[in-house]
Length: 228
Image (tube, rainbow, N blue to C red; front, top):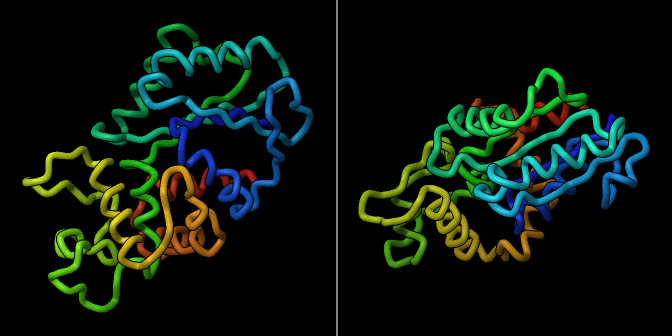
C-alpha cells in the first residue's frame, strides 16, 4: 500500500509525524516525491495552512495523484478544526473535493482525519504532564493551571477564558508553551523534538485508550495502527 499524506501543518506536526508513524508501527517508508513511489511508501506534504489546503493544495494534490496512475492507494488529509466543529471541518473538505471530482470515480481512497482543535491540543493530552504539586499563584503558569485541569478534563474540550481574546488553537498553544516552560521542557514550532519521542507519544496514546478522551487523536491513532 502506498499513501499520500497531506498535512495542514507546515511547522511542528510535519516534523513530528514521521516519528509518530514509526512509534505506531507504520512500516511504510517515506519518499520525497510521488515519482519515487514503489511499494509500501508514503509521501508527506504540507498544505501550507488550512486556507491554502482547502482552496488550492487539495486540488493540486489530487491532480498530482491522477497524473501518476497506479502510484497511490490512499490519500490522507490531516487538518485542524480550529474554530469549526469536528464534523463541520470534515464535511467542508469533502464538499470542496466534490466541487471538482466524483469521489466514486477516483482510483484511490480518501480519508480525512481532523485534529480537534490543533496539534498542541493533542500534546496537552500526555499522561502526567499536568503538575502534580500545586502551582504557586505567583507563577506565570498559574492562570492556565487554574483555568483547566488537563489531567482530569479532556484537552479537546478546553475553551478560551472569556477575558482572553484568542482563538481556541492560539490559547491551547500558549497553554502548552507556558506549561513546558514551567516544567523546563524545550518546545517550539520550529524545534518540536521533545514531543517526537516514543515516550511522549505513548503517553498520549495510553491516556486516550485508558480514559476515552482525546477522541480525534484516537481516530488518528486507530487509523494508522490498522495499517501496520
